[in-house]
Image (cartoon, rainbow, N blue to C red; front, side, top):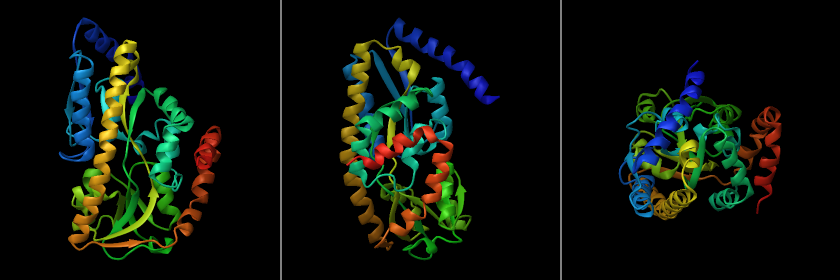
Length: 327
């Protein structure tokens, strides 16, 4: 029922938004889950400045940081509907909506972060973008979110058996749940805002994320072992409502895209700096970091995840193979 109502509102919201744009300067609202000072937050604020400059004040973006307008799944739906124009989203929660976007959530699909960007800047990225646009979202630029690794409170993780029996928080996506299950753990999907308390009280034994998220949320205070599995390399996008973007003139579309791309270049530079400083901060606080000497057993354990995924999404096999064959 909710999806039916959502679909019926999409056209009306877009018409209202485009009518307002036609009448003069337009104010957009944007969503971001990250805190002040975080690379994405700084980059989104810069995007708002560039948007104003490049459109000569025709478009103004009011950013709402720290998830103040709701959870990430709610915000994704609001951008799809047009209630929000802009959002900075991880592709993980977009995957269940746009199957093409879900491919990047396959564990160990990317060799490293540079490989991910080579894919996104090529044919693979265009295939993902097309799939997202069909669901009402257009990615204007790709943001770096680093590699995600496991962290927990009682032991380092060096082999799949070390995950066995652990309750591990994951984002709400069947692929992540499948990943933990194949390692012998118990997946616990929950909102990001609930993770700190859940780790502290033992509702979950561990979680997985990148260095800046692990540090900025204080998760390292209640989970002092960080194991560099780097099992997921999932980009974030600066996304816009498809109807809003497609309703702009070509000149305005170019201006919006240029602003987004420039913000992405800034974000990636800031991310590299923050990733290094976050690691330094948590290690100085006593976090025990361990490099996993051989990740092959983890990757091999994912074979059933890939098999199940491709059996249900046979049409996406060419995209998976394209990513895997990209140098």
